[in-house]
Length: 479
Image 1: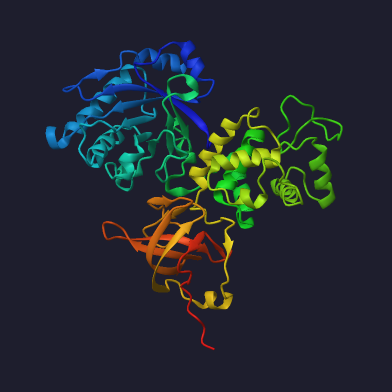
Image 2: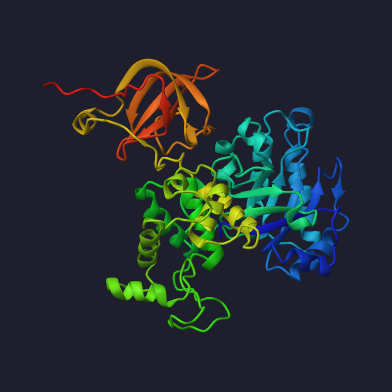
């Protein structure tokens, strides 16, 4: 699930069952530090590990483990990473963990090589050869973005667990888990979002390579995204909607309000459906009127859309629907939808939970805000359609974005990207190109590599900001 939480602990934390029960109020699993260095080096073993693992299993279905890496083959020889893996394995058995255990390698120590990828891979390969298949690489976002850990070169595309505090997202594309705080729920413990089951040892739902997980929550979430995206809501706005639906119902269109009678009576206060429509009779009356199944998610989404597009239908919080549709921050969007549609108070109705859920959905669905409501252009449709893919013009100017847009190495929306231009930021360009249903700005980066950023969605005729030189890469038809 997108917002499944996992805690990770070391000798700084307690080893009691009571402590694990406290973690269990929020987390689905706990990951315990086992070792550090090698038997011939630091030979460190967490003195509480055995009891922490034992207590963990009394509360959680799974308990994971991590090793703090200090290997440096350049200084200590090619066998150094293997020696650390051997030390980890020796002590995994000693504390009662088997080969099905989620085993993370913590890559952050200053003693590591500047590019630690080769040593990490040597460690991973040895672990894999010994039968440990649930492997994970942990590191701060800066280690991945700077190239100290090269994600695309990791052994067997090992999943990654990214640490990034005080941010709305991990900051690294295709992260499988995100350690978002070192003081989760005020417990002074690291907490992470496990996006796809990696930290739970369930990689059957993995989204390595960018595929959406296929459990019921994600299937329904994709239906919601696919419904609202053509209606020109920004990715952030849709993530705000998803977060509110998840808080209300788990995005389950057949969810009755817990603890309330199952009744369609208009006089009841029972809620039903993805938005917990109250009374439930309201959505039932709508479904009957249009002749559709009340539990069908698209029926319910049609009802929501009819409400928020009606005159005065999006009326809480002071924002119009169009303003909400332009949101570029998923946390802001979660608040706007809470107030604008749910009509709830941010101070009394779990705003923090809704916003954390919005940030988690953002990591899965943000596509550079290609669906942003945007500003309409004046393209000649025939000219645009007849312009070949890759058509390029040499032109200089500056573009100021009114939404977040990803910088990419190729003019393809499928390109994971390497950075983001945020609302209000400006880029200087020397080239424009038509490709992949978008118009692109292009410029040379500091290293001489050409970069691309989309500035308009051609199908929707929407522009993602203002241009000092607004000509588009369109090949005019001969008259």
